[in-house]
Length: 180
Image (cartoon, rainbow, N blue to C red; front, side, top):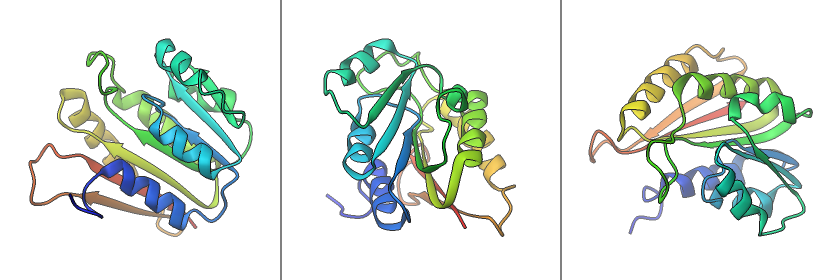
């Protein structure tokens, strides 16, 4: 097992833990099985966590974490719920492991959500986007998201892409955005 290049989600969490300048408000835009929300709730004072699948939101609700605000809605409506600046947002795209593979994040709604998260992001904040390209919509998401990220003004945002170069072409990628 690798320490650094093993797990995209662990890498995203390590980057946030190490480099996010304040740890007050975070968003998990894709709750799924709740691992990123668990991480964020251990490190931030308040966490907004979203998913369109009610059963996933209900399952996480049983953890009864006071600092977690659970939202059963699509992440492109982020700004309807989050009315404050954020220090961090995490996206873990694709479908939820162990669940219906037909229910997946979609390129256009994800792009809208990322733009809204950027508008809420404080200086020193970080957004991580784990992109899974092993399915058709994932390939589309990668193209749409990376095309957009390339247009972000470099005097305001630093954008980096982590990807495996000695593995399959469908290995996950991790985009990281840091606001100056």
